[in-house]
Image (cartoon, rainbow, N blue to C red; front, side, top):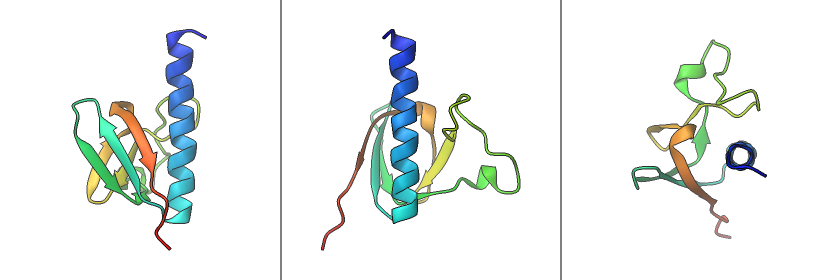
Amino acid sequence: MDDDDRENHFFSVLGGAVEAARIGGLCVRVELEDGTTVEGVPEDSPLAEGKNVTEIDHSGVRADLVLGDTLVMVSRIRRFAVDRPQS
């Protein structure tokens, strides 16, 4: 598998995890390329309201999302985690 395939696979896995977390109301923590950490329950981006959703490529992964009150460009995410809810 070459580097482009691995990167595409990363974004595909990320997209599925973020969508599942959004549906389940689970907190996601991401680290961006610049080292910034952002966390929150994923929400649909206001950029997508009333429009076709912008995708990072043709995989169906959204190009942006909202975590907490921060708009995150998915292409800037370098690492992510989904927190297990406390019972």
